[in-house]
Length: 166
Image (cartoon, rainbow, N blue to C red; front, side, top):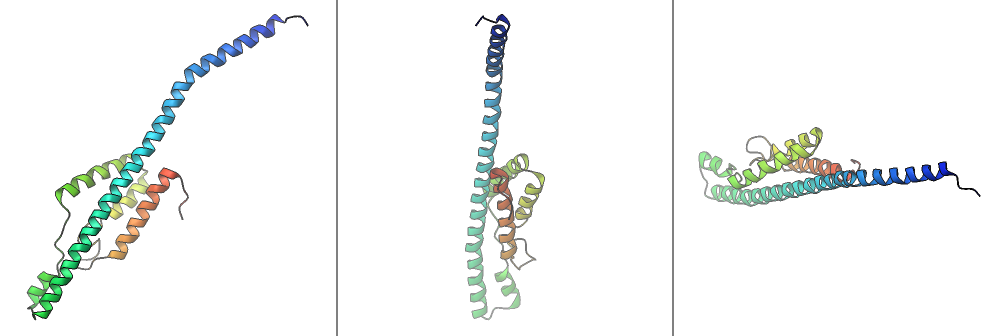
């Protein structure tokens, strides 16, 4: 079979073109995939920091609420006047300044890394970081806090892992 110079040249051109395309695309594609992976890692770190903040807040709230119930019980046992009883029932605890600083960092990360609807669900949870857990004055809304917590985390994790919402 005679050598066909045209097919040899064409084969060489395809091989050279494929090599050049591979050399040019490999670093660009590798960098793009690395950036996507890094973004997901930072998103997970942000969610982890929010989990820690929420847990710290809620555990401190439980501790302070237990103390409040003890104050109310003691005031009632002592037949305290209404003003003393009102002071005893008031939730006065708030997180430390360090907690608020860490919360602000997490807030900034979530705003930058997640979609607006998911960030809005997080903001609904954030509104509940107060002594009443977002409930009316003096009446903590633990159920509302837990619902906001569940909705925010479900959407945050769904954006990272792409799992469908229930």
